[in-house]
Image (cartoon, rainbow, N blue to C red):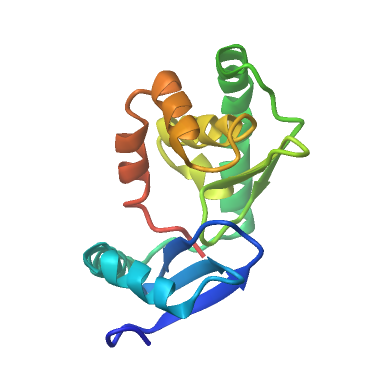
Length: 186
């Protein structure tokens, strides 16, 4: 508990601290380096409190809207349709972006993800994409694919990653903001 805010802290063998707000109830999760002092975590949360509150409120609003509008839940037909949509779009997207980025994924997997739009294992070149992207505007699939392919060069989200993303997709920050307004389906 930090200043009345319930914060779930997970210590991992990582270098940096990460903050996530998890739908549907807006749970605050911190991934922190194993040896990081508790005071540093408290300071980190306090420095981002306005961002946390704003995003928790947005997530709660989305959850309420979903509850009142009869939100879509995954079923086999929806999974098949989403996968078909992504698989149809991927060849053209890869043909466009592989020469620009200069790296290619070794394998792309489609998965139902509850807290991410995609992930990448740079060491193996594997990329995983959230199946929900197949139900959304294609520009979001393109953004996530470019984001994950950029991780084949840059492991974190530091200056090098941001520089590459700005060169590849100048409006990537706006796309990220729009994408993150969507609630991940369960």
